[in-house]
Image (cartoon, rainbow, N blue to C red; front, side, top):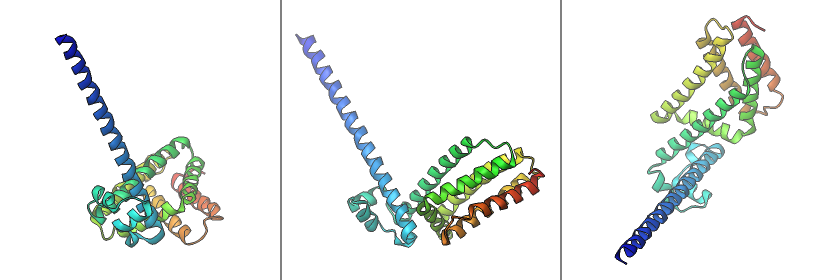
Length: 217
């Protein structure tokens, strides 16, 4: 009887532990979901009203969550902005990697097609593109965001350099910098006017840049 009672007690304790762990995991999942909602809402607000429109209270009201949740996950406005930008960069980096995998680059035509389609994809979610450039401007006032932006730009340059070197560019690093700056300029211009009809101009400029540098049409 003692052994049986001991076995039942051990099973009960084990069940309670599993229930406690399940509850903890569920709580963590809900916490991550709420954190994600806060960051997504922050990016939407940046796109619509700029960085200065963001406060803990406004984010909480728009997201429909308690004010305490925003201050719990992000102890300052700067912390909130940094994490929102970090999320944007992470998502964009993964999306770009997947995009380039879907467009194997073996020729100048492949490179131009891949970049043109990527820019079109960026403009398909113009609100997030707007948020990106709002954060780029804010980087002048925030060193940590400036560093995040530098890391993001370097990753872009490295990726472009790899592809351009494969195409035979004599100075792939320099060309990557030129292409990146050109694409950023195109996006900024596109944000101030409809991007439709500009795709042809983008394609022609990229073809000229890359074919002149690689000697391949």
